[in-house]
Amino acid sequence: MSNLLNQSSYVEGIYAPVSDELTASDLRVVGEIPADLHGVFAQNSPNAALPPIGFPHWFDGDGMVHALHLDGGEATYRNRYVQTAKLAADRAAGRQLRPGILMPFDPADATPEPDTANTDLVWHGGDLLALHYLGGEPHRLDPVTLETRGIQTWGGALDCGVAAHPKVCPQTGEMMFIDFGFREAPWLRYGVVDAAGKLVHRLDVDIPQPTFMHDIAITTHHTVFLDLPMTWDQGALAAGKRRIRFNKETPSRFGVVARRGTQVQWFETPACYAYHTINAWEEQDAAGNTVVHMTGCRIDDPIPSTPHATEPTVPRLTFLRLAPFLWKWTFNLGTGAVTSEQLDDVATEFPRMNDRHLGTRTRYSWNPRIGPAPTLVFDGLIKYDDQGPTIAHGYGDAVGGEAVFAPRPGATAEDDGWMLVYVHDGDGSELRILDAATMDLAARIELPQRIPFGFHAAWVPGQELRA
Ligand SMILES: [Fe+2]
Image (cartoon, rainbow, N blue to C red; front, side, top):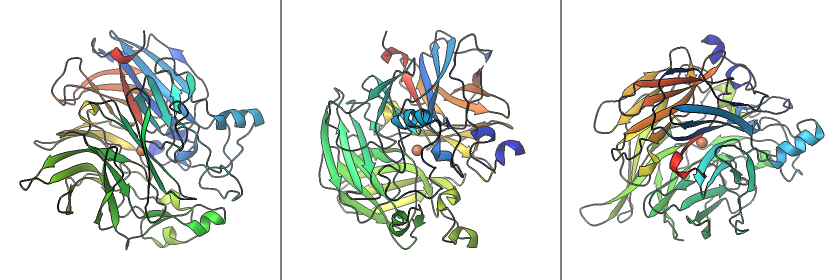
């Protein structure tokens, strides 16, 4: 365990990249893969194709997707690089052309943070879209072969990047996304793509300063922006260094806009940070006002107040403090009032829900539990129920990634399905399939190679796969 949790570098141990791109069936299964579990579970993971320059960070590696295609109780594993322009250029040069985010960069460089597409996966328009946390080009992947099909521009209409964590409305098929800048305004850009693949709305949002944005939330009629006071030090950027500052005296701002609207209503709370939302929904209060509820994982102070971490020469991205707790906010669009409350005192992150209910009132979420380690690792999965007790599934001496909900075909209950999660020990990785309602282990599928501890995952339902 200690070897797993005390890595000195993001290219060692559970973070170490793998070099082989495999296709493998006849995998060893412990238990039984549910016969009606049909689809693709895929996770994006940073995987440096060439040795890094200087100190690497977890966020730096080239995007590699590890997928299990499940059908009729059988499983096929594939892993493939996302074929980015950055990867092609590095390979042509035989070396990494740029250092990672912890290292100084050339301020004259037009693209000092190249698009690795290593962060997120979103299923939309028949493509598995691989996305970068700083915003970039949506890379279209075949969900089964993982072949990179090209760049999604929605017919050339896209005039900005797309950051990680677009939200797809399960009722309309619309995809809401943001892109954010930190070198030049507009600092926030918002867009909506409809189910047919048409960019139907774009809005440049005026916010006071560039912030380190990461996620949004949607309801059936609104989108919520998180303008939180973790900012980029502009002086440092001009000098070729990246410094992230958390301004405790600056309020957090939450912006609510109609899905295809232009007027953003802002709500202020004391300073906080949140990487990931879970869900949002709207209700009418007794006075007829629309109230937007939002759940997520909130961090009170993302940068610890230690002498070491406040030293200005410290590469601050290494010291982001991960003490996020389940939280709920409410925004009253009629009165302008905002409230928030902490719902649990166990540190969790990378929360997910049943995406078929995204944007409407939900009861459950499944949150990886943060283990006792200096770096972010998850030692179990918690099922939260806002009307009942939590249930936890522990990984023992292993660590797990993001868990994704796969609905049982024909299911109507919100928690009727399975949670799928890659779990890693010192030598290898496996997929665990849990009953999402009970958190009982249904099956473990041993993978032909270790998977580096990665970022976000997606479930592509079998009935939506092309023949
Ligand atoms: Fe994320």
